Image (cartoon, rainbow, N blue to C red; front, side, top):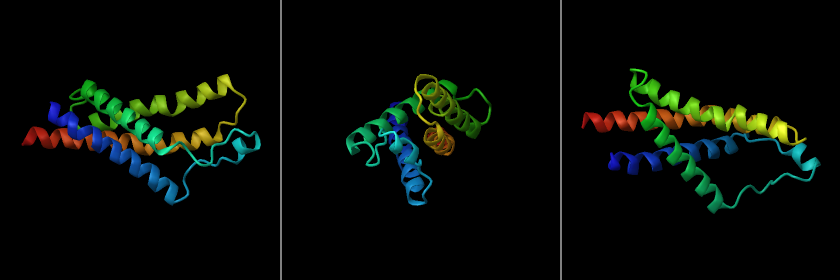
Amino acid sequence: MLRFVLLAVPLAVLVLALAAVGADLVGFGPELDALAQRGVARPEGLPHTFQAAAFLFEGIALVALYLLLEGRTGLWWLDGVATGFAAWLFRGPLLVLTIAALTRLPTEPFWQVARLALIAEPAAGLAIAALFRAGRRA
């Protein structure tokens, strides 16, 4: 199990980071104009160490969630996708609704991030599930 966790966390981080980089390369990142008009945009993004820590924390959380859900659906790949969608609920709509409830900020940039997470989170969950399945076969 320890070997799985030690391999799954970097795999999840890699998938999440590749999704973020890919989104930036194709211009799918959030439009910050509405936030810039209010003077609250951060166009330079987080410092790299903070971004790496965020990916690491999210990777650990995804692996832990996968281990809780593993075997529940009866299909290995559905366990992974379900893990990603469960994580997305908190990273996506619940986060955006919290921002809308607590601030007067426009929610569109946050919805753009949530749409990216709707792709990245299930993809990372599926990668974790594939790794788990491969480890069980060996």
